[in-house]
Image (cartoon, rainbow, N blue to C red; front, side):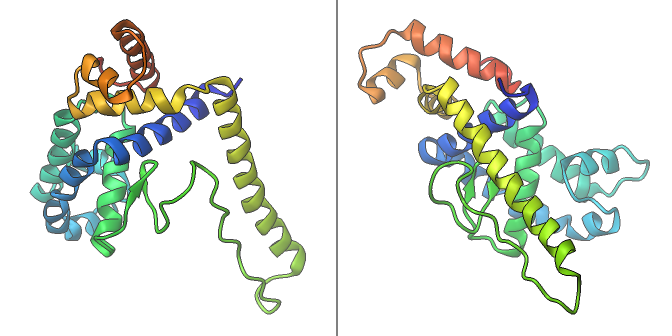
Length: 218
């Protein structure tokens, strides 16, 4: 049994992948906030804003720069427009994506993070290991650092495999929720899936996943 925090993170990964495939307009809409982020870059650097939580904190300071308030409100509005209100994960994912799009606007969005490579299944891409330089660090220190990175990647894969084993239906359910976020009715989802299932089956699965993600019920 996966810890609840890890389970929730993996479920969000599956939902983001489903959204990118089934409801790309959600992410296209997020890209329209790039000018709002760009207008706030100076304030972001000045106030040492590096994620959604630090943005929220900065916005509570007296005399907060108006550009930060506008960015916060724009991200909140985007989340609300697509039924992603409630938890912090979509807000943090949005801020992270906008930060990287400021550097390279064409980077794809996948699994809740912008990635240089957006292929394959969740958590299967091997990490980029450090390069050993004998003039910088002793080999035992390098070995420990490299093993830590690689073992963390192996652990992520093991946890993902456990989720797929315990919840083999998760990809389908994530797809159903993405289609609901897109605005599809339950009957439309059944038509798109082409399976002999009832609306109650789809609705129950969507409600369960929605609750596990901390989202407001659709």
